[in-house]
Image (tube, rainbow, N blue to C red; front, side):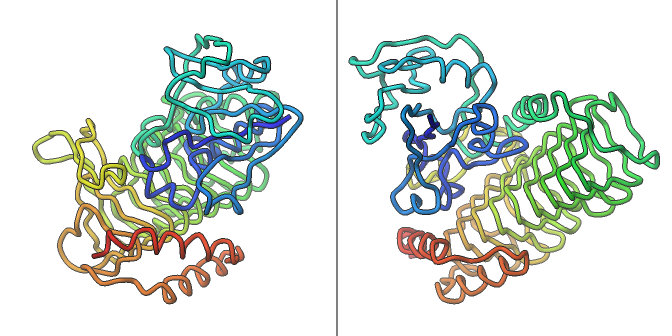
Length: 394
């Protein structure tokens, strides 16, 4: 038995984050969507995604395979409803397919995620479903995901002890430290949600933290960091300064002073010292952001929206990001003034091309510093992204 998370037509709408990962590999709460489906269901979990991503993010097969909307955040109730489906059924909510149970061989075929196939028997799901369909949904639903993940991950388990040198506001039972986590002389507030500190992670002296917060394995909050919930910082991240309602996927650095708000960063990003994001227009009006699906700036319906940054992108010191800026994969942002609201993948500074060979060499160096191999599969994915985004750099 296995779970197959399908991009389900959402891939383009979640670019640039999904240039380098399937929809189901996005991080929203304590772990990625796929990791939580696997933990809750107890089953192998794979992906139906773009062809160039399939070697790194393979599908899975079993005697029974349930194909699930990749952007659907797993809860115990939703997972139970999916695995309770009989072969030949489709799980729906308000007419929208959430999952298919087509039979032992039907996972080979692409399913239609706009309407339920007439040959499948409908089953209605009446519980709450949270679906990630646009990049800003990641930080908007981060708190919901952390609370749900925290309840499942910590149930029946005992946290490592919290040093008496810390100040706790709210319920201390909503603070959970995994093995070898370090938290000293910090102020931790759980009034609005839990605080989860992963294995070997560190909250340094003087940090002020409001939950919900998820700090991934071996990640660090730098001294004096000010973190407002809801935030999720993935494994090996380095986070300092002031951060509000943002998600950092992992292995990324925002290690210095500067403000990051209502934003999503991919993996292997680096924000230079005093990089700041605007997350609210001076007019308090609706933010427009670049849509890869429409190849244009589009209204988002959002009042608060900062920066969306693809994997391996970087900013120089004192960079100022305008409200609703979208930076692509391997974008290297530098120079005075505000950069453009859409910074194409593999761009350098104010409009030059970041040569592919140089970009890949930097990626390898950055990953090797964290003892993560830069594989031929990683190289092939980035080469594919470079070629498919050429028109954006013209």
